[in-house]
Length: 304
Picture 1 (cartoon, helix red, strand yellow):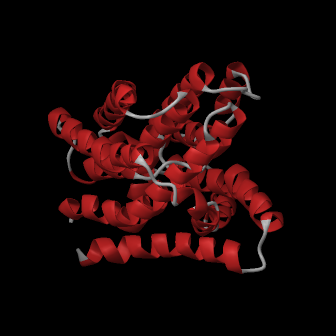
Picture 2 (cartoon, rainbow, N blue to C red; picture 1 turned 90 degrees about the horizontal axis):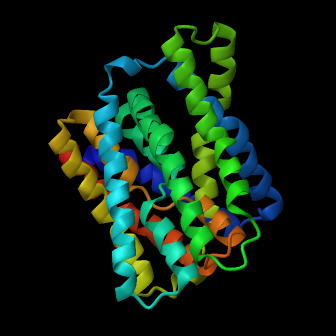
């Protein structure tokens, strides 16, 4: 229990600190918006490329791990459609529920992976970024295109943004450099490593700054359903599939951790652009992030 709490409590403390800085400090949108863009387009990709280019990828149970994560996400996504009839929810609200049930926060996943398993944790979480993130983004766009209202962003444009996603591109570049044997030159490694050191603290602060307690106060059955699916059902199914597929140790733990992370803040942006219920989405993100402070340590306990 103590090692897990020692690793994860500082992560959530950073998120709380970001919330406090945004609400009570002299840091408004003029600070947070460009900071988040800097982290998203420069610092975070630098961290991923540096790690993946030099990681021992061939030693990872890559395909069974990926299959366990993808299979669990697809089952929960299908469950959302089955659950819709039992919830008082319209199309835009369902699009928010769907995203809240399957989209992970990569900042929290990587920070937790590094805190628990150091650099191998980052490599393992990056597998989820490469495999799961593109899939959940495409699925979210499809659901928003069919259930959203008054979308300002067409499905084709949204999918083009996924292809140009800097985090996904960074993972692809890092893996390509690794598998090709080219790697990074020593000067490039040090430069990118310096940039990457700032990525996780800034990313966690931005997660906290984006929390919306006003939306979270209107907690209802839909928010509770999304949080249950994302924080309990999805990681539980991931663990079961890891067991069936023979994925063990840190690889299985990181697969569960990745799928157990709260919904990504980018879900709010996409939901608002494509006509989903963005207020509901903000409430889901906030509730899941706060609840993950309890569920994530509990889920990681069996691994230690």
